[in-house]
Length: 299
Image 1 (cartoon, rainbow, N blue to C red):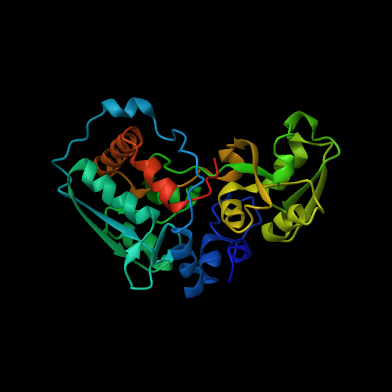
Image 2 (image 1 turned 135 degrees about the horizontal axis):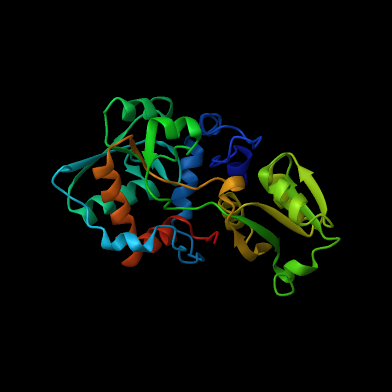
């Protein structure tokens, strides 16, 4: 299985409810052991990532958490969400989220445990006080918002254009009239292009893989879609294509990104996590983790 298959499985589906993409649970059920092996290869690739933009509130650096109520943080995660949380060939729990959870505990100077649960049971386990925080890509939907509080966003999910390498230098977002833009049909990214670029020639494809391949095959001038998923496709196609232009952050369309869920009302843990996220951004740790797990940056 190639990196192209990641998008075919609907990798990292965390879009708003009005998107027609598969649910997170449906996407997870399509994965196999071969997918996890891809990320072992990914970690050996050279890094082309940009540093992370600032997602957390900079003013939070002045808010010191009260550590007395939290002698430890019991993190819950899953094993089916590479490169965020999964088991390597030796069975060890690894990933961006796993590393981040451990760094949060180190920054706050509390004991830390990380326990893996099946995706279908993870949210209920958090609600049942089996853990203090869930770091597994839980959607910040109204339903989940009624059950849990969420930390600050630690990884936003922008939309981005991809084009052929030869066309990157001449890209101008003001001259897209008449350009052919490939999108995934029914996606919020398609809605974005149709709304803001009404004079472009929008060509929908069944999957993002097909839309990206259309750019490679010169059947389209540009692709617009989820930047994180596109970054994995680019790992195999660096000689062909690359990101171009700015990253577009539209939480109402593309999702609010990744945050850590805590039981509703557990402000001590949530404040400690938010404080740690600011410190980890300030001291470069978040950028370090991002560069490690996302060799082709999507910002």
